[in-house]
Image (cartoon, rainbow over all chains, first blue to last red; front, side, top):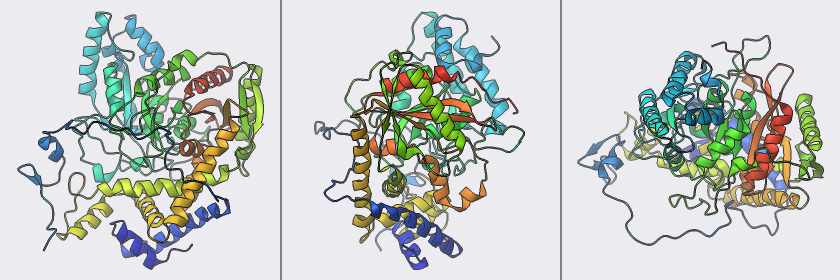
Length: 95
Length: 494
């Protein structure tokens, strides 16, 4: 399937990426090439096959519903670009 | 002793225990070697020499009392994918270029608990996405090997290129690495080293920077098969912090090294004979088959009919998981935040576009596309179904064989800056054609150096085992190692 420039723009936006205009044409070619190559999967008969989401055949483990960790505010914000008094400072979210 | 850095992990650990040399001497020898080599090879992106000397001194105190763990005093290199508390961890991405974890990955904690010494963090492709180490934010790693009569810089492979290069050039006794589609085995094959990806779930993924969670698995790159058994033993453990971590006991891997392969049934899959593969790769494969036959194994022809669909299947599943995993890099809580823009969406988009490299952005977009409304069933769910077909191929094969032998890579190491591969992403992806099937099926796979090509470059053979049967993989890997007698080293040009 060919991915045109408009689709590249839409996918970039869904990906929260902003690619410069002069890169969009090249990306259209690269993504079309990769997806075109992937199309060969259509040759495989998968009727009745269950999707395989994990290679681990064991049930999801459950733990007791108790607090097991905490009091780590300083560590949690240690790498934040902007903080104040243990809070993350982010751009305005609600006008 | 003048050649301390050339020791195997096993000999070094034995030498430390018998006090032939101290961890401080050994560590200093590696520090000297790294200082000389790293400007040329770029294998380490961060060195932690002060920490290494302190750990070595602590190990020496323990060893003097006859105490210490199984890796006591052994200097190792750590792939920059593992979070190391207080030591910058970037996954070689610009978006994490200032990230200093406040916690330790389970795998590295296991190593420190066993007494290992950390020399530093090893270069890799950005977020482990690449096969040549050229997508690293910190620049490519150079392979210590060179083609005969050529001075061209070669890739050590990827994504664990720094790990492979450092082990091959004696810049650590052994290294941690990780493998999502071949990132341990392909660089090991390109550098004449041994690499094993264990069964999915053997090693905890806690504290490993995530790429594709259902495929990512930790493993070692080492000088010998016996060394891989030792290091993997330490890396494996059950961990409540990783919900996919297996609760099964970890066997004594080293006890399988040297075990007879007599009577084992070795599967040879027809579908791994590809058009356009160099004759030397096929010849080495035939040689490997002959070696195992001589050692008393039985050779069985098998069929893995969905092999050709493994790479396209992987290039849906891995980018889909990556697009989801990498959504966390939003410039808010950690990582790069743009200096431009004040509106929320602008900050998200600019931070991510500035912080991620070209290949990572390409894969995020592929992943977003195959997960988007209208394409989810046609691409993503379809790929999950093909994945099961690929896993079933192996289950069927195990009816007639115990272990599978294949080439590790479709070529020897290629030049850095290869224009054809740079221009065509799919050409680069083909590096993983022999390795990616085991990630999809969750099986253990090992690359063992088996010979040199006509240019004098190392080539590897791959041994694939049943789930949880690393033991047989170690036995067969060691048999190949012994038969090959691979002892070549790159000449020291740095």
